[in-house]
Length: 236
Image 1 (tube, rainbow, N blue to C red):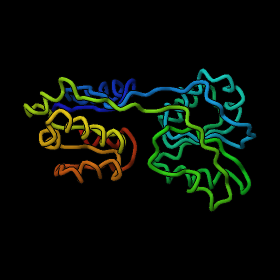
Image 2 (cartoon, one colour):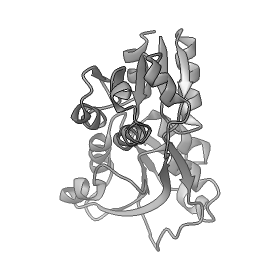
Image 3 (tube, rainbow, N blue to C red):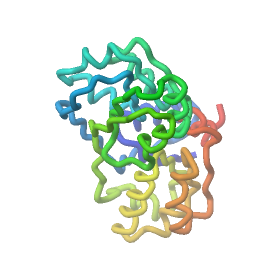
Image 4 (cartoon, rainbow, N blue to C red):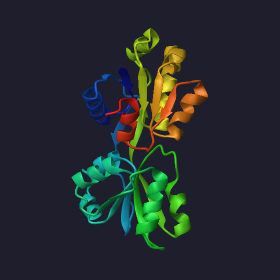
């Protein structure tokens, strides 16, 4: 099975290695490039906890001048990969929601008291609103953008592979990356060919742009985690 991985580096290569270990042939074509904002103004605080929905947030914090101040706080993450990245930059009190943003909101509500304030280290493009999700619990969220994902303009040589029908499946990890994949396919004039392979999506929200564009072979992971998506593509 030949799988196209659209995930940004370095996560895309890590996913590719896992797929190869399961017997897949992998083509890497990142449709987003992550730009870390290492010295962004975080605000004045104080905060009771830090929240992250991506390992990119932890990586952006690694070189931030206020890193030592923040790693002394509890950090609440959306999943295990983000939790591992938080550990790597120095956090010791780490809790993972092992789910999506809604699960993280539940974790914040369970760990924080009414009146607490959480610093959310976020990406520029966000599908949900974490602050609104926890507001009914009396928890305030300060959202600070610490990374952005820059969209690719073309699929390069991958367009030819899609048109030739040599791609069996495409993995999509975010709604935005799915939308950019479609935009690049339109720009290359290969949209029909890009919709033909089986599309493996991290969540229903990720799948929606593909289905709206006309993709008929779409599968959604049982849970919004990389391992669940890998099991969908190539069961271990």
